[in-house]
Every structure is written in structure tokens, then in C-alpha cells.
Image (cartoon, rainbow, N blue to C red; front, side, top):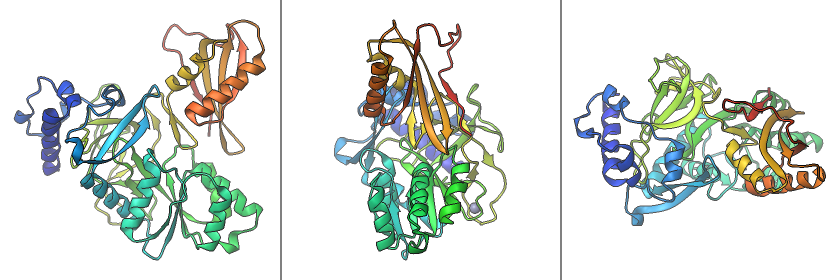
Length: 407
Ligand code: ZN
């Protein structure tokens, strides 16, 4: 622990010297004088807004010739954030991810079908690099293409499926419909940790009868694969030999005692290209006290309970209300008030967008514009509800925009 704090302080010192973003954040702070855990906890947090403001590479702490890859995720307003990796960063990430597979009992005899998307998003490539590192056979098929997914699953003998729980549901239903269960060899599923998965998981289990593992991660902190639940399924082990984890009170910023619920904060002290110091994930969880029965040395966090900001997750995609607001702003016939309602309809996530039209006009046309723009900008098919001006409730305080009614 003491050693880890030293490494975190060294990383902080390094970024203060080398990253323009951290030169600003740590201005006037004498990190050389810092020695203890308490000293480290006095350092300011880093947040997604800092990374957005640092676009494209103001947070980078190495010369560009040392960067071998970038990934990107959408920021709070849709402005992307860019995360650079050195060769060592990619290796560390693959090693952690490989460890996830190992914890889930996956070996070189397994066939791993990877259904999350490839490209700037960290999910597809993270699953692939980890599986190759582990020595398993990977099928990097990527998102969608359900026909091909089912065909390869049968023909190549897929034993492990990596996906969001919502896509696993699609596959499970197809397996049922086509009576394929006896023709496939699936044993395990690795699912991105989603808050609303429980009922969906039961449904998937009914059809596929496989064991599920929750994998944790976020683009800013390598990507998925910095933690996973073990065969005991009582919390996710997180890899504290690469990342330092804290749980804070999201309101006061104070570090909470072990076991108390708060916001997860990460420091990537081994990262070279862009180490992040005390990065706020906004994921709400807690450390599970005590040792896990499985005997692994890594600490455990509980399943993610929610968020300390207004981001929400739908069908595996992170969305901030400001992104929806930006879409609605582009439609001249709409007013500025809007609400987002999230529902489960027959186990499927639905995103309803309510907006007001400026004067009486063809609401059908407005609805079509909302659907089209949300699809192209957010990648989500929404259900629009256009109402008359003044229908949506106003509030003098910060208006609540998102109503999550999913179970
Ligand atoms: Zn365990």
C-alpha cells in the first residue's frame, strides 16, 4: 500500500512536469514534499471535463513518437476525449484483460466470440488483445451481424461470448427461436458491467444456461478489463497492481472508510502515455471488506449501483443529457425544455425523448427529425414524444432531465 502511494505520487510528479493539462491542475502544488496517503488524498481530482478541455492531446505525458495507439470516447457534451497509449500501456492492459479471462476460467482451449464494436471504442480491441494474450482462439466479429454470430457460434464451436447483456438477450432469443441450444457449445459469458442487467440475465440464463462474469472498466482507465468477478460471484476483483482505487463521498470528496458506498476514483500509476491522477469515474460502488473465498489477492468492489453525475447507460452506450440537448437544439421547431425517460419494455431498454414544439405544427415531422438525429449522433433509436409548449414541468432549481424507470 505504502509502495503504491509512492508510485501514485511519482506519477503525479511526472504528469505535473510533462502534461500541459496537469501543469494547470497541479499548479502551485509541491508534490516533492508529499510522502503519505493523506498527502496524496489532498491532490485535486481529475474529471471528464478536464479531459474534454484538454482535447486533443493536452493531457499526454510522453512525446508523440512514443504513442502507438489512441482510443476515444464521447465527453459530457459529445465532444470526444482522446486517450493515447504507449506500447507498454497496451501490454499492461492486455495483461490485465488476460487475467480477467484467467479468473473466469478461460484457457487456450476456449473459443472466444467478441461482439462489442471495434475501432475507437476500447471494448472490442480490449477483449481481443486480452484473449490473444491468454492464448484462446478469438473471433473478433464485432457488433451486430446476428446471422453471422449464430453461424460462427455453431461452426467454430464458440465457448465464450463477450457482449453487453442487451445483445446477449438478442442472441438468447434467436437461439430459442431457431432451437439451436443443442447445436452450440457456449459455456460462459463475459458481460460489460451494466446496472440494469439482472432480469435480463435471468432470461439469458433460461435460454443459454451459461455462467456470467461482470467485467469492469472505462476508456479513460485503459478500457474494460481492469476488474472482473470470480467464480464466487460476490463482487468484482479490481487490479490494484496497475490502478490505485479510492472510494470517495461524491459531495465532499473525502475518502470513505472501507465498506462504505461512494464514488470510485482511479489513479493509473503505471500508465505512461496519459497517467490519470485521482480520476473520478462517477460510478457508485463500495469496497467489499474481507478476503474473497477464491483466494485472489485483489480487492473487490460491489456491482455498480449508479452514477454520481447525470450520465446514463443504454444498450451499452454512455450518454449524457447534454448530448441529447445538443441534438434537440439542431431542430428549429423545438423549444429548449426536454425530458428523457428510460424504461424497460419486454426486458428491452427504451429511451423516450419528450420535447416541446414552439408553436402548433406537424409533430410527426418533428418526431422523425428527432429519431433521425438521435440515431446518427448518439447511435440510439429513441421514441420521441412531441408535446405542446409549456407541457413539461419547469423548475427553479436544476431541472431533472433523466427519469430512469428501469427495473
Ligand atoms: Zn474472488
